[in-house]
Length: 566
View 1 (spheres, rainbow, N blue to C red):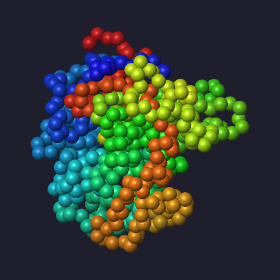
View 2: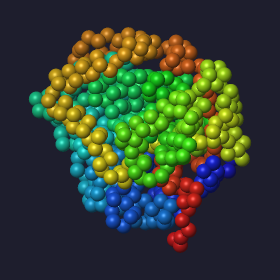
View 3: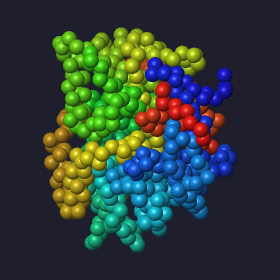
View 4: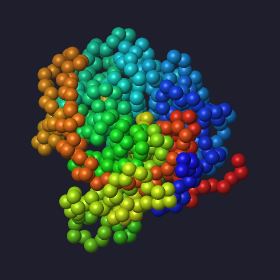
């Protein structure tokens, strides 16, 4: 029973582990990971002429590697990393490529470290261009997540285990003294400060979010919203530009460790120390399903945009061309047409619309789970008590190994999540034409302008936004977390910390009881590694996973295995 699987079958067909496509340290020796930071993987496509533009970065212990990624096409050649770095006194914890600026000659890679610094490097030119928080004056705690702001060539966001997040601009310095802050916005369990200084310096903004470590954040596909998960067990979703809290959710128990968005931005999935995956509706601000399949903490959740589909009577899948994928991820237009097709679902229109999202999760139990989010969950036709009959009731055991299992009552279509629990880069988003991100670009320039022209404008922008956007019901929904005074103060730690008693949130919309929401069972649940899993990324022709021993594995999608001579 405990053997490690090298293939599995879903309704799409057979997924197969390609042993020749395994990436690791050049000596292929399993890394002894005791006390080490999680292995993370980042991808970028440099659009070179050879058609082999994919590049891969991963950290193992004190080492950081940068390789050409050959995927399902050719065997990995580990003897020739394009770049390799070994750090002393600190370890890399996470990294993210700027997909906008990547070329065959140059890439911008941000690397976060266990002692709090962030480095900007170019592994192709082999240059270290800048070091941020070098003297650790901004934050001394471990970097948990680092990401470029979507559509920006210069702004990036960094989260720390202190519970703080900082917005940086690569063009600005960090100063030689500790920053002084001025309160910009305060709300329930969060506060945002600007940096007070005569000349513009980093960080531009400091966010204090919740209690305990901020474990991961993810930008929505359109770049407008930011989802954060923290050790206090809360998911908090913010409007990034106006710094407004859009909604919150509480884990069943324990900290939340990972988060990702559906390709159309309508759903957020989290995973954490309650061994569950939780699906949250962005529009309704509520939990719509939980998934039980892991036997330990869930370390990464990710949607599979290539298996996620919206079908009309003339089936139209989003698994087709790059164009479709581009629009699904970045274009409001395509997203809107998806919405209009979805709205037909509830109209009198006779053509049926079926929607399915596929997402995946990996955990410390060394298992990969794939999940389907289907119509019966998304559009329940009857009150919840009856809707529960659509899905399997929770079993403490995972489904029998042979079951390719779709849930009874589901239409056999499914959804998967792609996510690095580190800064999950959008899978291959860089391989899309740059114009795909143009609508995000306008946003970041607004933000740049807002910050550049000082706090006053930024503050007015947010207050104005607040009046327009916030409805009474949003405020009521978050009441249970206790009231926070809104007196402004330069003192940083005045985020009136309201201790939330788990017993008080259970059974409320923040954290419904188990029997009050549908319970998903995984389509497949397979042990695929010896050590805890830390990476899950969905690419067009494969799925990429990695474990703490430092092995990065490629699973060919059905029909994508290329036979070749190594």
